[in-house]
Image 1 (cartoon, rainbow, N blue to C red):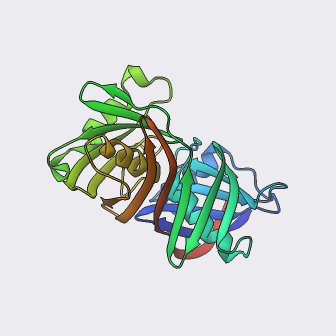
Image 2 (cartoon, rainbow, N blue to C red):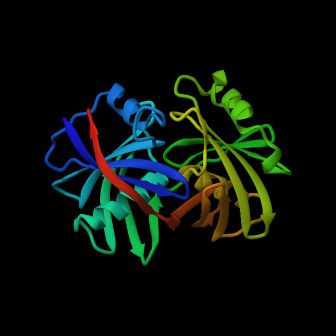
Length: 255
């Protein structure tokens, strides 16, 4: 079977997106990993299916490059852009994805994705752990460019404390009172990615504990994002991840 796809990137976090509204394809794990392979496939951090839904604008099914499922912030933003190109939505959307129903809005070239409230921030030594739909370990560092993200990230990701699914790992440098720089080791990709939407969101919330205030600007290797939220004691609400989503190329792939 040949499937049409669109390749997208959101601050360097890249995805293969497929219009599956006619339910022509039910992917197996091997299909996903083969398509996402950067040498033998299209190459991507994840694969996204867009499908019809009876109650919401659409359903987004997200797979990491290893075939596992999770919430993906940048993937959601790219899916919103793609849905608009299919005329499913216009400037606002309500859609179902891995962890439930989310809202999104489009303002010119900026796509904003709303995440669920965060009610808990765990302290682990000098580090923090926050779940923003996907689990994230946050470590503040002095010089994020000097961190061996692959080695340190992999070690924390596989720590027995986070069994059996593991955790994503973020290394965060505070640049000034409104800006942080973030590098992320992503589980499911099992490597550093150029950006991670749920990771920068968790990092921004963690930075609030260091005195930064919403909105917080985030620099990643793949580009710039912004996270805004309302903080009330240890509860974080009205959380929005904002940034670009860019179509790269389209094609067909054999599965």
